[in-house]
Image 1 (cartoon, rainbow, N blue to C red):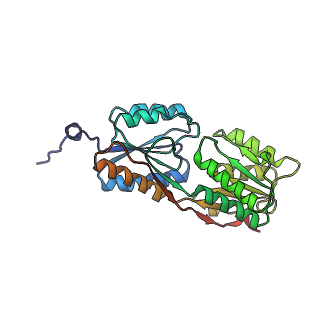
Image 2 (cartoon, rainbow, N blue to C red):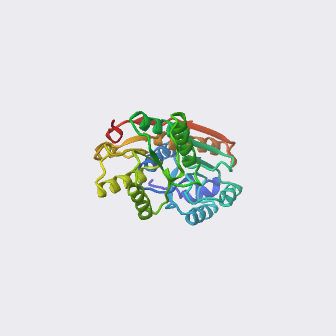
Image 3 (spheres, rainbow, N blue to C red):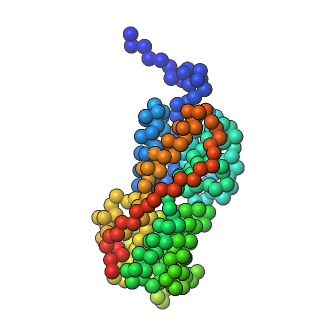
Length: 293
């Protein structure tokens, strides 16, 4: 007869919004787009809507979004922290309001829940050793944030690989970058204008690798002849760059899919508290021309 039930009335009756939220620090990064696609595939199977929120890597915006979600707008949250997040009361407040959280990639160790990450330490080690095996002896690490566990693990892998091969790791070779692209450009440019330019660059995220390309182009520094570049990235155009970019590629789609599967498993059981669980997926080293010997 053409009757269409009112979904909001159904939500009130069953005390479910049939909606989950995914909170990401940025949407220009192909990694997060793939993770969203993975989570959405599970949400569709469960007949749920997926709301996407972007914090733009700002703590205040992250805090505001979680406060907004406490009113029951969503049944659960999948999220990756901003680089500026140092306090976690807003996360605890959301869980206390009965809304479970699952973290992926940029996780919070202080909150007891499920966390989906990649093998950041091992991948950081492998990335650095790959540069060493291709002739690099002076490798700089471009860090995005000391607040993030993924950055610290990647840096630890970098330092461990240098130590294994008896290569010094001066503090001046660890460049502390931020979300400010202009400031990052200036820092990386200063690195290449020093008395001795590094013969290898390990970028913790793809933005910093792309900034390195721009700097090298401006200063007429040849990649990979003068310096080699590797980074964590799911950039689809990595093979099309000049030179093509060697990457540590994360299983982003699978990470988003697993995060959603765990969230729904607990929603089906009507649990607001998710037990502590650490799931580590393997990333893949894809060798291209930017690290060519």
